[in-house]
Image 1 (cartoon, rainbow, N blue to C red):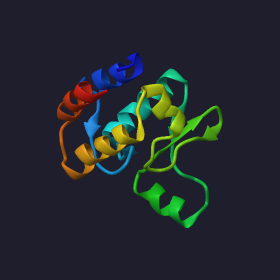
Image 2 (cartoon, rainbow, N blue to C red):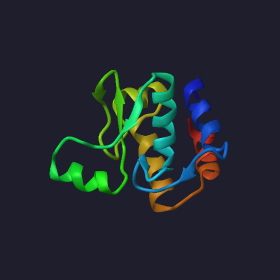
Image 3 (tube, rainbow, N blue to C red):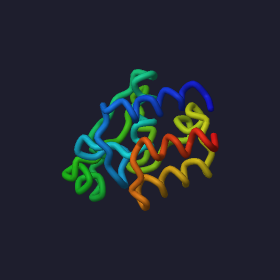
Image 4 (cartoon, one colour):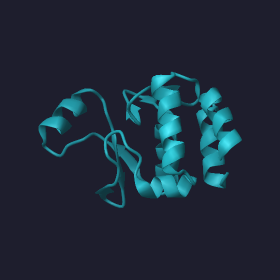
Length: 122
């Protein structure tokens, strides 16, 4: 496991994040991938922003409190998907991402349970 993912696991279990499902960051709740994204943007001096692209999807999601990531003045993540460079930074493969999504969103496992599973496989 790389140091970045280890920091993310520690952050997820710190009590500083309220766990959510389906979205990286929605109404102040984070899914596990959202915690990873949040740690990444803190390190890279990025920020969470409300979608403001003018599309119908952006408008409706903006009203729902969904956030995107802005880094170096460009929006780099999709609304609910983790950008490739963030995955690379955390040392995650697509298999890891699929597992995290399943554990967080489908099985509704706690951050602690997800962390333990990641420690076993990464």
